[in-house]
Amino acid sequence: MHVDDAIRSRKSVRRFLPTPVPAPVVRHILEVAARAPSGNNVQPWRVYALAGAARDAFCSDVVAAASTDPDRHQPEYAYYPTAWFEPYLERRRRCGFGLYATLGIARDDKVARARQMLRNYTFFDAPVGLLVTLDRRLNTGSYMDVGMFLQSILVAARAQGLHTCAQAAFAWFHQVARRHLPMTDHEILLCAVALGHEDPAAPENAFITERAAPEDFTSFHGFAP
Image 1 (cartoon, helix red, strand yellow):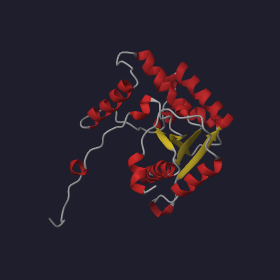
Image 2: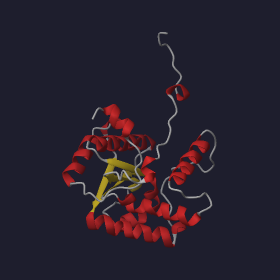
Image 3: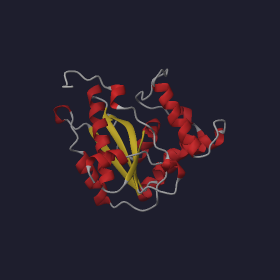
Image 4: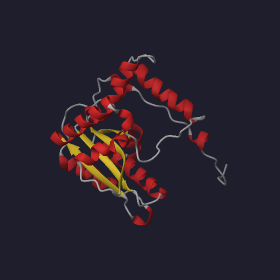
């Protein structure tokens, strides 16, 4: 797959088939992604790959925590702003409203919305979940490094005919992750990646978010006319 096609066909898949993904394929994706750049080549990421019984036990505990006492669980870093403003607020709204409309969930249907939110914590049924952490002793630049690593995972997965969903939602449940995985106190759980085969019949997988044109976010200088 040409890299342009891999990037353009990447999307957030929110329902996967149960088809297993072999460990050698997961390892290959991570090996390719590890070529992502990082400042001074510090390679600040760490990955915990979950499948089978380990994945199921972890997901079960996260779903229970999110269902019974969600307010007790908070992330160790701020992903979103405390106050939204334009143009980001409108983009966020279009994303959320568009997804729920695709699923046929009304804006005032809190039960259905909560049920859909809980699907995050089963990796949307993907057979593989990747938890990505960062050493908290590093600095802000390392967040950019991990971002490039994550994008490389998503693109490398497409080259294998697989799909993904990057999920910040798991950052809230780092305490649960620590009960299941050998995470050190120095690690911050940044996010997860659901990895597997897309369910092409799922309506939510037909929802594609729009992107701004380069002219909307780029100022060109010094180019020939």
